[in-house]
Image (tube, rainbow, N blue to C red; front, side):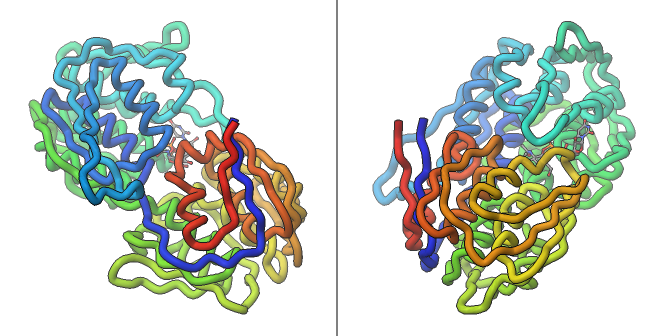
Length: 429
Ligand code: EPZ
C-alpha cells in the first residue's frame, strides 16, 4: 500500500492549481442517469472516487468515455467525461458497490424518476458517523414514490412517475437536497424544497440540470422551486472549483508559512474559512486568477470555530483547521455540529505531539511550539489530509499510511505541494 513521506519545516511558495470539486462531480455524474442523451462534464478531477463511480454507473448501463490527451495538455488539467445513460439496463445498486462509496446511494432518485423503480442498498456505517438516509427516503416519498426496505435494500416504485410535492427538510442535508432536485426535475408538477442545503455544489448541479432542460429556481437559497419536465436532454457543463481542496491548501500554507497562489479558486465558495484563516494570522487576498494565501513571520493565532452548513465553516475543513491550531500560540476550540464522530484525527494528531482534548462535540486544542514527525494513519479523507498539514510543520519525518483515503479526494497532492517546495514523496508498495 502506498504511503506519503513528509519531512517538515519547509515553507510553501508558488502556485497550486485547484481541481474541479469532488462533491459536485459525483452528483453531476449521477445526474447523467436522468437523460438518454450524452452529458459532457469538463474540469473533472482525477480521483479514485470518480473512477469508482464510473464503475458503479457502468453497472446500470452507463458508458463513460474519456477522450485521449491533446498536445499541450498538462497532467494537472481537469479531464472531460462524456457520459451516456442511453439505456439503463439495471435499476439495482448492490451492497458491494454502495458500501464502497456512500454518494452512490444517490443514484436512487434519478433511477426512480426515469425508470419508475430502483433497488438501492442501504450504505451502512461510515468512519465519520452514523449518516442515516431517512431524509433522502422522505424526499422521494413526498414525490409519490412507494418505498419499502427489503433485505438491506431500499426499494422504491413510482410506476406512473414521480409527482411534484412539498419537501421540508427538518435538518439541512446535502444528499437530501440532491435527491429532491433530481427527483423533482422529472416529476409531474411543481416541487418546493424548504430548508434546502445552500452548498455551492447544489447550485452547480442545479445549473447543470437547467442546461439539461430542467426548470429549477432558487438553488443556493434555502427555498428551491422545481417545475417538473417530461424529459431532459444532454448538455455540457464545467465542474466548479473544489472549495475544500482550496481551504485545505490555504491551511497548509498558514501552517508551513510562505506565499502561494491557489489558482482558479473562488473566494465566495469558502468565505467563512478564509475569515478564520485571517483571524489565525494568514494574509488572504482575492486576485484575478485565484486566492493568494501567505504567512510570513507572524505566529498562528488561536480561533473559536463551530462547523455549520454553508455558508458556515465546513465540516470538511474541520480536521485541517485542527491540525493548524495544534501549533497556535494559545488555546482554540472547535465544535463539530454536522457529524457526531468526526474526530478520528485527534488521536493521530496526538502522535505528532498535538495536545487536544475532547468533550462531546467540542475539541480544545492547546497549541504547542513543536510537533514531531511520526508514522500516522487515518480513517477518512479529510482526517488524512489534516495529518499531511501537521507533518508539513513537524520536525523530522512523518509517514502517512493508507494513502488511498487521500487519493479519494485530493488530486496529485504530493505533486501540488512538492512543486511549492514541500519535502513530500509517495512511497509505493
Ligand atoms: C455531503 O455528505 C458531502 N459528501 C460530505 O463530504 C460533507 O461532509 C457533507 O455533505 C456535509 O457538508 C458529498 O457531497 C459526496 P448531509 P452528505 O446529508 O450529503 C444528517 C467529504 O469528505 N442526515 O448534508 O451525506 C447527517 O447524518 C464528505 O467529501 C440525516 O440525519 O451529508 C448529518 O448529520 C464526507 N438523515 C447531516 O444530516 C439523512 O437522511 C448532514 O449530512 C441525511 C443526512
